[in-house]
Image (cartoon, rainbow, N blue to C red; front, top):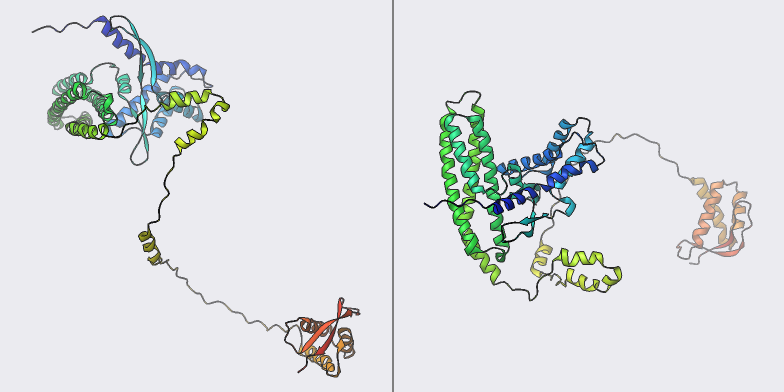
Length: 470
């Protein structure tokens, strides 16, 4: 049997340089804490960053990820324990700054980028590496959670550039030995690490599958994906079988566990069951991956292709536009607007639906029940009319003189005063005269202007009144 050749120092050095570069965001976060307006001398910002990865990966083991509020609360508690002098506002500001740095908010959540020297080629070659530590993803219900990437999980576990499959196998072997020897507390910690590897492997495999679904041109199915899926299928089958064996070993320890070890044994069982369920689901996705590839190939290969390459909106459009003058962009704006807001056909009227809605009976509005209460009525005296019967008699007596011929209002007022009538009777006479002056009046009197009114009480035009004929 041929011996495995030792690893070249060039390969090991390149791998370690890449591993070290991925820690750059954490070191920069610690180095720049003095530039803030807060006194963070007693705060280890790198510990806060690792706690973000810890919470995120732990939540990914039991659900889709960690909610932003949960992460911020945990970071605020950590900051308060490190420096009790920090006020709540400063703790909140620090927690948001750490989470934002992990998501790379300063670069609009683009990938972290680092340049390094690759020694694996014949000559040292400068290369560029891009990676994410965290991503904030939207859930089907509209909520958002934070998830750790494969690189982020590697940073947390401290095993960068280490094959995840080998790590899982090694940890399960250690876990099997610990359970058999009854070292339950050590087995729980090993199982937690195994769960991290399980989540890491799930994210790695799903990322490749999603990449193939998005664009087949970015993956080589025959040379890369097909072999990877075959290895993944065998690996997952081994993991499920191993976890079934470990669960059997743990079940044998339940009855013999002491009161002190019983909670740890229960936690160990829950962790193993969670990993097993995750691997079973992932195994199902791997089994149908070939069918998914064929469906995506049919969809992507036979779809209409654009004659020209689509531009990179950020590098080729937004960047040059922000650096150009307003005058240079003025002529290009109409074309841009036509591209951003293309013509669209207006909605047409669907007559059957309209008829159905018009013929639909109106919805019945609920009628509120009103309780009628008996009103408490009080007897009041009937109000007396403003004009008394004597006032009407005096006015009719004066108007009866018009039977002998027309007369002016001033003359009638003088006759009314000679009868000793009240002020109300005078006002009643004036109202009767004004009513007779109205052209549409149907009374038996008719009035017309007749110079100025000469009276001590009333002013205005004088009226000449007479009886209507017939």
